[in-house]
Length: 439
Image 1 (cartoon, rainbow, N blue to C red):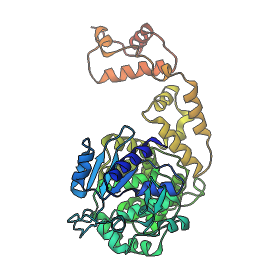
Image 2: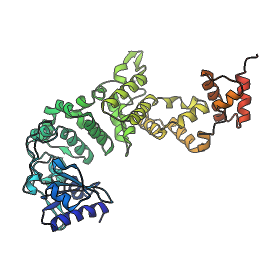
Image 3: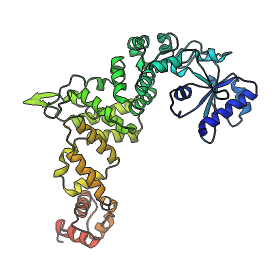
Image 4: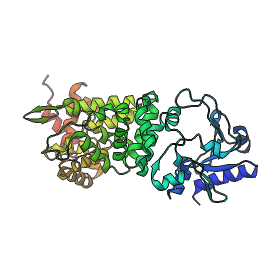
């Protein structure tokens, strides 16, 4: 048995031995029924939080007021939640008052989707299904437990979660759920930026991101959470470079090509052409002058709006800012090529360029050139030891100032080009190109 599952089963066993009903619940049961390996295991029990803490003194009580206790285990924490029946929701996320339920069935009925409402008895190897979740898994359908308007009004983030599950598992959104999302879509703006960000990143990285964004669009959520992406629709591109169609189609094709991407690469792909709608113009042919610069600023604004970390924001912005540089790669000086290759996260830049090519003209010449060069040049040549420092220049009689940067870059250029190899070579170059004025 997988260690995490074994740990969760052990917790169920102890709760049962103490006389409390206890089951595995939620996404882990859904994944087990679907033949997938769960990432985490959750337990639902009749034991009250204080009783759970009494049995597991090492517990963390961060969610205790909502009936949730975290039981740490070597192979991963296990969330243990007391059966509850949520009352009225006042903030679109948390119930005003947590009411503990008497049965597992009552607990399941307040959950979001039928596929997440399954219980599993690991001691008897039996699935308990009070909501038709197994039927919906077989039918490949995401359906709410009970009235979809009520479920989505309780926690509006569930609208994005419905899309994520449908995309991730290649399921359909049940008709009533889809209609409710379309009707309530504008209310997603009441959800915190952090929670929206987390769902968008999961849609982008958990699998089937193209379908995820098509569903976001068809449920009216896209224009609410990412209006800049919605604006890509219908923005034509020069057919000689983009036979695939408009900017939206091009972006969807790139999303379809993502394979287990990092969040920053996925966002870079999504936003790499976000500046095109604002820079569209027709002069002899369709043009998007300065769309990279405009797009980089827009990407930065979007990432900040979604409360992305400063480090990840910088990476996404750099992916957008540099995505067209590959077209000039064959004409670059070797030193410029090497500086490009050693950029932080260059593998993401390279992969974005590959997807960009495959979703347009299909030519991978520059991608192959950059990839091959990266594989051929030793690390010590990509990031060589500096031959000169500012202190060396001061000793030579140069005064600190803006010229230092110019001199040191000229030295590094010559080093990367293979023209110089020693500190003596570097000093000779400096004396020739940047002679000190005669006193």
